[in-house]
Amino acid sequence: MTQSLAFWVENSSEKAFNTLGLELHFNYWHLPDDKINYLDIGVLISGKNKCFDSINVYLPFKYNIKSYIPTLGDKVVESEKLISAVFNNDVSNIKPIRECSAKYIVFSEQKDSEGIVFFTNLSHGTSEGRVLIEEHSEDDEVGTIIKFSNKIFNCSEEYKEKNWYLRFRYILEKEDIDNISREYKSKDSLITYYFEKSEVVDFRVNESRNLPKTIREKVATCREINKVHFFLIRNESSEFKIGHTTYDRCRILEDKLWDSYLCYNKDTQIKTKMLIYHWKTKSEKNIEYFSAFARFMTRKVGLKEVMFVILCILVLGTISSLLATVLTNIIT
Image 1 (cartoon, one colour):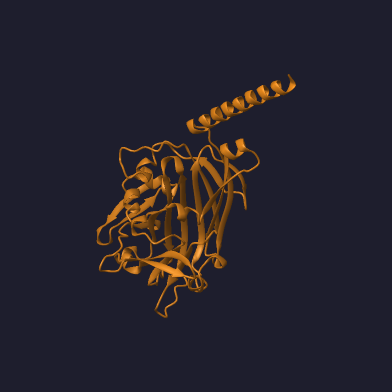
Image 2 (tube, helix red, strand yellow; image 1 turned 120 degrees about the horizontal axis):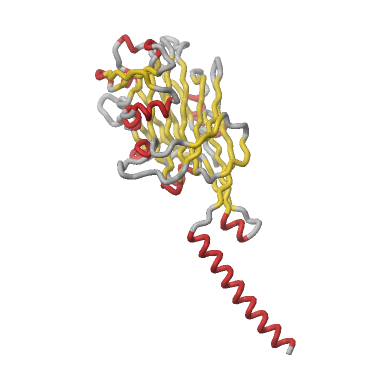
């Protein structure tokens, strides 16, 4: 059963954070041929009055510390080309902010006063309690909660009113993928069953009926999300069939540019030609939930499939020969 991700803000003080806004970015990299199944999550925090204790993420995935990759931001800011690709905007200026392990980035379409502060120090398990990761178990549903404390954003006053940004990765195991997408094979015929498979992607955020009760109660008070972007990256050979709504845009991803972003071995290159589909929604008030549904069809003809066809031909030929012999004997 498909389960939903969840986002909410916690604030113990009585001071309202009515100017706080969250823009969520999701990149679901599903490239089985390269053994890449990642969910990258970015959070853009806007507003002059950013008063909160923590920003919280619930993932319907099993608790696995090794799956959480906090260094994704460091990888992005290493290259201006990669920054431009991630934010779809040319970089005008980058300034390091050493006191809080961040980079102040200004894009060509922005004034210097409108840049973003990209926080890259998202390590968990530190004594300061900057990032906390814990297992959440409830009614036979097991998930993971990641809390990003406001201690991460301890920057000087000149950056307090800027837009803040953080980005991390969660590596998906087989059972994690099943909470986002499912594969099905046709049963119409033996040949179709073997060569063709369809996949349903059902990605949800803050959908109450697909969340545990305690998470549902926390999400009910979330009024800060005003934009959601969902990017689905797949093999070029995958054929889009239907979706709950038309995607906003589809394009071919650049070759080699994303190798360093996706691969942890510098000598590794992505062999798959990639297509990226983009769904988005926004609201002047708040987005209660987000959903993206799509179905894809994939046909694969490799060595294994060719051997299967040859075997079928040999079996059918053998059976035909035996039947011909039997019928000849009966007739004679």
